[in-house]
Each structure stands twice: as C-alpha cells, then as structure tokens.
Image (cartoon, rainbow, N blue to C red; front, side, top):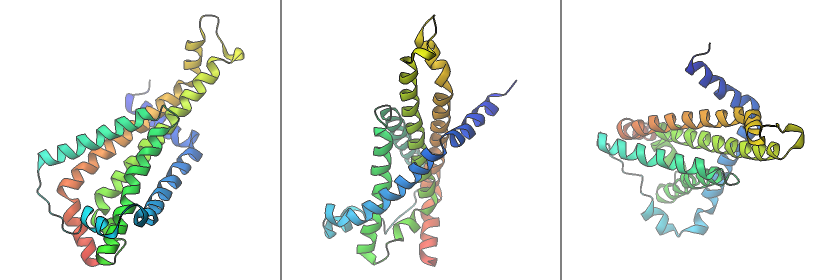
Amino acid sequence: MMSFSDKYFKYVRGAFADHKYLFIFTVLFAVMCWIGAYFMADWLFTKQELVDGFSYLAQETFFSFDDMMEIIVNNCLLNIIYYFESMFFGFGAFEDMILNIGMSGIVSRATEIACGDPFLFLKLTCLHGFFEDLSTILNSFAGFILFSFIVRFIKDLFSPSKRLANGTITNSLEINKKHLYQSIAIFILAFAVMIFAGFLEEYISIPFGNLIASIF
C-alpha cells in the first residue's frame, strides 16, 4: 500500500507528465510577462514615478520573525486566492503571473533608470526572488490544471457514452479526479515553496543579494 508521500509525489510527477505542454506554456507566459512589463513600464509610469515608487536600492535586514510571518501569510493568501480564481477560465493563473512577475519587470526598468543597471533588482532579490517566482509559476500551473479538470468534468458530465445509471456526476468525477488531485498536489508544492521564499526574504536574501550586486 502506497504511503501518503508516495501518492503525493505520484500526482506531482503525473501533473508534469500529463500536462507538460501546459507547463511549458505557463513558463513562456511568465517570461513574456516580465519582458512585456519591462518595456511597458515607460508607458505606464513617468520616470520619476518609477524611481520614487520602486526604491529597492537601499535594503536592510531586520531578522524579524513577525515580518517573516507577515510576508509568508500575505504571499500564501494571494496564492490561495489566485488558485481558486483560476476556476473561472484560468483567470487567477493569468492574473498571478501578470501582476507578480510583471512587477519584477517594471521594477527592473526602474532600477535601470535610477542607476543604469537593468538587472540590479534581479541581483538584489535573486535568492528569494527565484523561489517566489517559481511558486508563482507552479501556482499558476496548478490553476490551469484546475480549470482543465473543470472543463473535462463538465464535458464528461454531459457525455452520453460516459454516463452511469446511478448518476452522471459520480462517474464524471471518477473519470477526472486524477487531474483534480494533480492540481492540488502542485498547489501544495507552490505553497511550500512560497513559505520557503518568505523565510529567505527576511533572513538571508538581502545580504546575499547585496553581495551579488557588489560582485557583479
């Protein structure tokens, strides 16, 4: 009999195997969000607004547990909201990447205007930023799978060839529950990565990022 962890990682592996093209699309869309936001920043804001509104050039670490928990709770709550919003035509998944990864592109443009280095923001936040963006991509991927499950569920619900005499809802759920479980498994993975990113952001990321920025 499979343990819980074995079942969990089975669904994680299955999600990437069964939805590999969806995952590739998610990654490509995330990259497009960063690039698009970077080049649109000058259209959305004035140069002064970019410099004044996104000042990441002077960072300081306070090593505060309360601050860490605030970061984690806020980011994880957003993960939950975007995930469930994805039930509606994948809206939450798109919104998550556009707002969060797009913001990284805008701030990168702001740091370029302020100091001439378009990659300074990425250097300063490279440690926790990698895991935060990874969580965003995974969470969006989970959201897309969730919407895919809903589409499959409704399709099979009204498919005469897949109906059971004792009820169509039970049969449709039985056929498609694997995709629901895969979605939940990836969502949990994204949630765990976001928690780790919050820890890094408060305790390690800023001095590490400042070191990287001073070297490169």
